[in-house]
Length: 363
Ligand SMILES: [Cu+2]
Image (tube, rainbow, N blue to C red; front, top):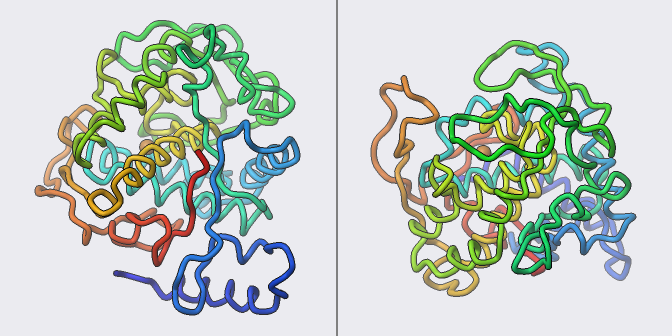
């Protein structure tokens, strides 16, 4: 397995910090979710559903996200004004045609979440683990009535703020989706005053704009409910589990991946720059939680199961592409995050308590 020099030195510095701590003290930031001398993942971070966090933990998370958007980014030489938060948008945007509708969709996004979680902790002093959003708790049959906008995740005080102002939503792709309830700028909560500098879609120009949302209870009811998740869990191999989870580019088959994006709408509905929406990370961590939960149901057969094409199986995201690689994803296949992190192998991302990652989920 590839283990880069920088991650080794990072691990060493974390280790040094860990050794200076007295073991009876509560865990310090550097110890939590790291590896011991023998490379064993000890004290894995425990990723929790958003509503399981205390108000203080929620506030700390939201503060750290805002902090990432206040630090000048590594791609500010490409697009003027980009923050670290926007580095992630840049990397997601440029890699979109190569990391969706492919076998490594889940591993790549797992690496993306992990790196983001590391940045929240190491650059902005966040003390917790990356939370997830289980939207099935907000829609029938789990919730009594459609309560998407009433979800604590959209609280202006202890959440991500509410819906966007009502507007003609020009952001919807050609999927013939039902109209959401907003469409314009988010006006409350911690991100209402944000300026995003990176343009939508594939454009490489600066385009200052706000965070937009258009909550969509219809899509949430259809694609974010507990039965949709149950169908994912019922699949027997990685290939089908992933395919059902990621879905297809059509409303009748969008899957929970598309469902989570289009239920929030606005910024989250542009696949290239969907992570303009900070909830992207809670949505994708929920998808990662589903993969983890599916694997944990039969670890021996599932933790190392990987399959699917290297090149997208449909041309929708990159109609003019040529010369893309053929073949299927294996454990040796390498993934990168541009300037954000080193290349690593898919094998390093399969076990969340392995040589590289160190986290579990609270269900
Ligand atoms: Cu993505």
